[in-house]
Image 1 (cartoon, rainbow, N blue to C red):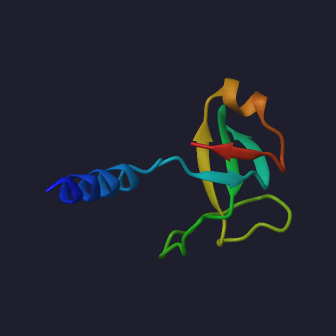
Image 2 (cartoon, rainbow, N blue to C red):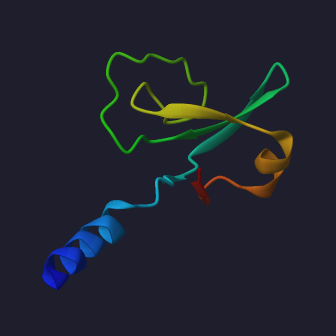
Length: 82
């Protein structure tokens, strides 16, 4: 019985994972007062389309809207976790 509890405890401890995702910022842009980071997704995007104006970026990239405070804290090339 002790082995069962130890095994269950082991499973529970490893099943609780951190859901934080980290990406590398490839471009930053402010559009109509909204701040965006552009990055490559950690998954294959389905039919999501975007018109990114940055150099070298295409529809294989995604964006995320961030606050002014967060926008000012990070530079292109930095790792951003959310």
